[in-house]
Length: 565
Ligand code: BCO
Image (cartoon, rainbow, N blue to C red; front, side, top):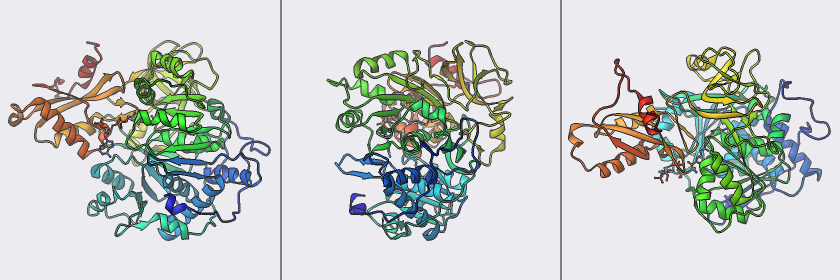
């Protein structure tokens, strides 16, 4: 990367002068939405303009480092230039058009940001995916979306090529690598020769922008489609109040580029505020390395899954008094009050909470400076109107357990997903009266603080990953040792929850060494689907509990795990 961009100078730009903050800001508020919005022109180009006018400090827009000591800093001006070039590569070289789907499967390399914003400039709908995905995961995503293009690394390129007969629809394959690969376009060299002149589309706020695949209790992951409104939401007063970011902030969200948390924390939120996005390639994840990074770089803000904070605390380092860190926020899974307290004691910084899903972005949280109630995930962030509802969509009184619902009628709030693409049945299933039913169980107190209780269904939330049990059961079923299995959530002191598989063995494997078999099955799951889903706990059982109609009673197994039976 450094080689590719060394000595790179942005060409003179024609910048958009529409202001998003400060003097001249449009008078949008949490509820009044503009008809048109595009993150690239309204946000990126605005800050580039501010830089040109000397109205923004010297902090870079993107500050990227890796474990090899490489470092790269791009200003907003450079980001504008490079993402315009990317837009031209995508449309002119690759022939992609507004509305086409593009799979974006890259690790935390700077090109991820270029492609994401290049897509936003052109209206190409990008689908971020984790690089942990295996062939089966990738082909499903390509087929489900009828993707016209893919951007990935040299590690995954052969996997994609092996899928050509199952999915022949790829019109363009872009490689981000210093190696070349037959049949793949070299993104790094194309961008150097591409023109920096590009006219950003005038996207309607409710035009589609991105798709995240999200796991459900049954079936394959759903295509959660988001509009440009997701980006506009970061821009609204309530969201700005929630994080209270400054242009001098250096924001680090170590979430994998495949998740919506990364999109919010490593792209939309910090850049809307003109802050620096800090990226550490971090592969593999290592909490010790994270600690060193906090000491080495002037990071002021961190948004991560609670497991990340837990893993840092678990290292027992001599000091966690980070020199520049001011604010931390945990989201993606439940956080215990003891953990919040331990973090405060060791770092001297409060650990705030946020709540959201791939369908919703951040919906609820402890606003910066707001009183923290131990164990609470905070208050609703407007325009989301969040209520605790029953199964018919009736609002329940405070301190009553129910489903966490987001009001969608009469008006769907900005930032909520548009639909599950090609799946009107599932889209309708999550509607409950006037609300979108998140499927999460919670309570709210009289002051409007929400408390998360758990899932209403069998979905597992392991260290912030949403995992559908059937995805793991299907992977296990491919192994000859498995007659049948039931996969449920099980408590874990570090990851909050982990995947546990109850397995009935086929007769041939009954006499096999169980420890050996456990390792083999774990390895098998890691090899056929994204490894984060593998069962960290395995129990061999003679039979599985079933209903009279033969349906596996996962809830019974789950309750046992959590000591509720
Ligand atoms: O435990 P093992 O070491 O045996 O296995 C691990 C990895 O080593 C392995 N693995 C990873 N990449 C691989 C691979 N194996 C083969 N090939 C590869 N390419 O697979 C296992 C992966 O498990 P993991 O990722 O959970 O484990 P790890 O590395 O310990 O990471 C820990 C965390 C905490 C960093 C990670 O779990 C994490 O990032 N969690 C947060 C997820 C997140 O960001 N969620 C947010 C979703 S969005 C949302 O909730 C909405 C909020 C608004």
